[in-house]
Length: 252
Ligand SMILES: NC(=O)c1ccc[n+]([C@@H]2O[C@H](COP(=O)([O-])OP(=O)(O)OC[C@H]3O[C@@H](n4cnc5c(N)ncnc54)[C@H](O)[C@@H]3O)[C@@H](O)[C@H]2O)c1
Image (cartoon, rainbow, N blue to C red; front, side, top):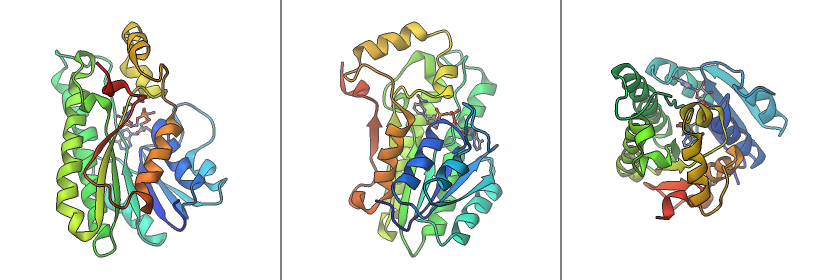
C-alpha cells in the first residue's frame, strides 16, 4: 500500500504513534522518520526505529518538540533527505489527569501548545515541503473532539480544534494535491489513555459496555487506518474527521 513512500510520524516513540510508524513499514513504506521528545517507548520494549527496520524500511529518530517550528523544520528536512515527504502524521499529543470543567490555566496552556499549536506548526511545515509534489497529512485527533465529556474538557476542546484544522487545511491545500484528514481514535490501550482516565475507570467500563465492539482498541488498529490515509488508495478522501472508535460515537 505504501510502496516507495517516505512517512514522518511525530510522537512516534510510544503508543499510537509507534503503531502508526510500524504499520507504515509493514505496508511497504521505504522510510519512516520517527520524531519525538525521546526515543524510548513509554511502555518499554524495542524502539520504534528498530521495529521499523525489522520490516526492511529505512528509519531515523529525530529529537523534536512539536511546540518549536525550527525543530519541526529539522524533522521535515531529515525526511526530505530520505527522498521527499509523502505523508506526515501529526500524532504527538498529551492529556492531563486533572482535566475537566475546572482545568487549570497551566494545564490548558500545555494542552493547547502541544495538541493544537504543535499540530498546526507540523502541518504548516509539511504542506510547505509537499508544495509542487502533493502528499497526505494526517492529524491525530480524538473522539473527544467529536463529543463533549466533562472529564476531558480541555483536551476535547483542543481536539475539536484539530478537526476544524483538518477541514480548513484540506480546503487550503487541496488545489496543490495535498490531502488533509483527521482521525478520531476512541479508547485505545496506551499509557496516555491510562493516565487521562485515572480515577474514572468506572466511567471507562461504562463506555466499553455501551460501545458496539465492546473492547478497547489496539494501537495497530489505528496504524492500519492511517496507512490507508497515507496511501493512494484514499486519493479522493480529504477534510474528514474519521472515527476509529469501535463505534463509540455512532450510538446513543
Ligand atoms: N490512547 C487513546 O485512547 C487515544 C484516544 C484518542 C486520541 N489519542 C491521541 O493519539 C495520540 C497519541 O496518543 P497515545 O495514546 O499514543 O499517547 P502516548 O503518551 O503513549 O504517546 C504520545 C507520544 O507523544 C510524545 N510527545 C508528547 N509531547 C510531545 C511534544 N511536545 N513533542 C513531540 N512529541 C511529544 C510523547 O513523548 C509520546 O511518545 C495523541 O494525539 C492522543 O491525543 C489517544
